[in-house]
Length: 238
Ligand code: BJW
Image 1 (spheres, rainbow, N blue to C red):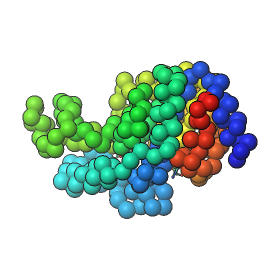
Image 2: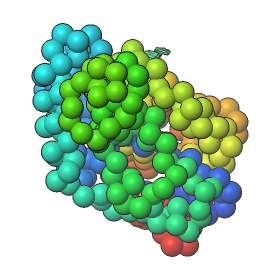
Image 3: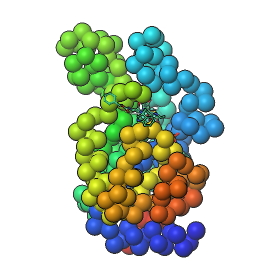
Image 4: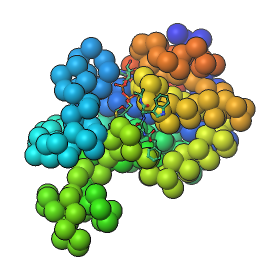
């Protein structure tokens, strides 16, 4: 473990551009459930019923209740040492650090990260399904066009926000090192970003206590929880 931590620390120290793809595991140690772990959300709730447009149209009340339940959990937790280590890295290295997050919980921003691309949206806001207007209120119809308001997240079968994903791809093409942290790397197109980075010459590092769909492609693997590994890798010297 010490060896790989030293190697990854050196890679980060020498990189002129760093992309970080994060997933639900980064927030696990804050107390936010992941999706696909044995105790994850998809073990208790149906993605088809709760994270798809068909599910929403069939029962909008149930979907809204589920998102309200998750919003309450997120409001009651704090960023962890992993989020904080990434925010501190960005404070030292500026815009050369880009976080591409699949997480909708805004914990990176609450830890102080600024250059964050939310490829699956966020759970804090609502969005009109018809005109796209974004708001923070819990109105169920849009005051602008009368359309249905829904959480501002990306459900299965929906396109990711095009400009945000384009910027994420650009960051992956430009980086020297990509850290892939706390994601099962099963959900596309985000799961394809590490391959983009590798194809453009980046070193890809997986940080995850468990093997994932990405593991066989990663150049280095740190098998540890992110709130432990990130502070060790991203010490002040990097
Ligand atoms: C720790 C830890 C610790 C634990 N420290 N680590 C190509 C092939 C096959 C299928 C597809 C394909 N392309 C597209 C698809 C379909 C689909 C898809 O990928 N399906 C697969 C599941 C098979 N993709 C889509 O539908 C996407 N849209 C799309 O492709 O649109 C096309 C289109 C184009 C043009 C017009 C219209 C359409 C959209 C995907 C949206 C995903 N949405 C969700 C819900 C968001 C809202 C919400 O939160 O409610 O996003 S699903 C869920 O999965 C959520 C996550 O962001 C996403 C990824 O999960 P993540 O973060 O990886 O979490 P887990 O739980 O899977 O993994 C946790 C990891 O943490 C584990 O590895 C643990 O070991 C680890 N861990 N503790 C570090 N302490």
